[in-house]
Amino acid sequence: MTGPVTIDFLETDLDEIARAEGRVAVFVSPDGKLDKSARRVNRLTRGVLDRMVQSSDFGKMKPAQVTSLAYPSGMAAEALDVVCLARNPDLAEARKAGVALGKAKGTKPLLVLAGQLRRAEEIAKGIALRAYEFTAHKTAERETAAGVRVMVSKPDETAAAAKQLLAAVEGVHLTRDLVSEPANHLTTTEFAQRIERMKDLGLTIRIFDEAALEKIGMHSLLSVGHGSASPSKVAVMEWMGGRKGDAPLALLGKGVIFDTGGISLKPAAGMEDMTMDMGGAGVVVGTMHALARRGARANVVGIVGLVENMPSDRATRPGDVIPSLKGDTIEVINTDAEGRLVLCDLLWYMQQEYQPAAMVDLATLTGAIIIGLGHEKAGVFSNDETFCKAFLKAAEAEGEGAWHMPLDPAYDEKLKSEIADMKNVGGREAGSITAAQFLKRFVKDEVPWIHLDIAGVALVKAETAHAPKGATGWGVMALDRLVAENYET
Image (cartoon, rainbow, N blue to C red; front, top):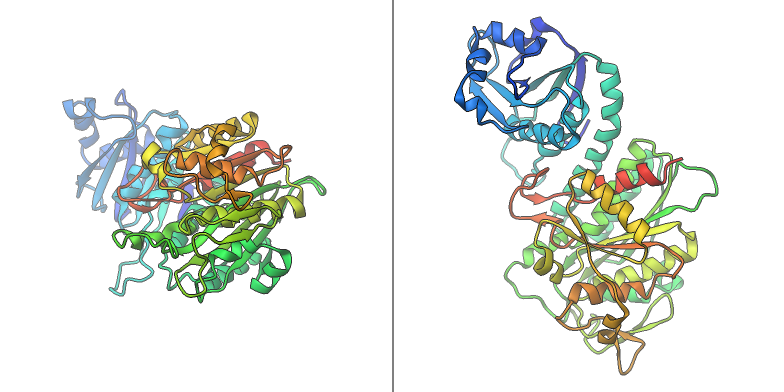
């Protein structure tokens, strides 16, 4: 089961092709050659594929492009989707073809005639990634999404390969669901409860309430939620599937369920999108779900800070000075720069409690990163070149845009405070970099660390390569691959 669509793999059955309802997808190589399944379709439709590959339109088709033929003669299907794809496509083209089929599918059943086509599991992954819609709060009766069947020559082998990939898709869908939820439904308490239910996957879950956080000393994180009736919480998720005693990879997420800006109130226009300010936490939760579902042979700990940034008589004010878990004091210049106040305590706690092998934090942290990179790439900041290259390689392989941004001590000048150890903002110039420099102060020199500013990629207004418009789930697949390629035993 992958989100709203079930994908099954079965042995190729030429007789079933004629009876299949809904949509049937067939693959034709760019040179017009037909495999066994395509030849069966060609006979059923009295040569429609022969005519198509000989037409000028076929010559204009690009790899992974889909052309749909409605109500094909000789078949029960409502549509025949003809996909131009090499018999041995690369990963990107195979997934692109799957995404195109997932987009076309709608609610109808889909039969994919993959036969001996390589990377059939990647095609299935692409279908599952794109066949997504968030409908939790729509009351109109909707047609239930039908499943997908993929006919292949080796169904058991393909299904085994797809299991690993589709676990990541489940994580992506979970992240999309969380980011899409409105804040009156996904409160800090509800978010923590959803995380707690993940113990059924084999994760060890710990939830800290405000009293526990006060005792630990996470005063910077707690300061963000002072103005809200929704209690601040921290959730820790442990997956210890690697060698006993090996230091874990740490994943940390900003979980601001709604961000008004606090006393430094945001403009009203567009504020409704601030339900996505927990996107970093959503990615961490989705990744931990994926690792547990596929039984990753690695030690990974995820931690998320769940808060709500609201104005009230109890809210933190501009000019207040607050202590961090590390002990450094912070002058709050702008209460809308709250994500770093959450993450700095999480970073220090993680290093104290787990001595991690490396850390990755994710946050919808700055509008400045959108000015710099738009909605195509996340900003990547790191203190370790090797670790950074490993992540960028994983992100590129998964088609998740990421760009290496600079860190430099020169930017620290902008964070100097007259009354505390630092300010929480450094002005408009280089805003995403000074935010990263702030976080770097809470990372020990010997710990490899990556900060991912995902403000531009977590929620988008137009469809992406893998997702319809809205929440993307960006980062789950890249982090899952990072673990698989670098931390599994």
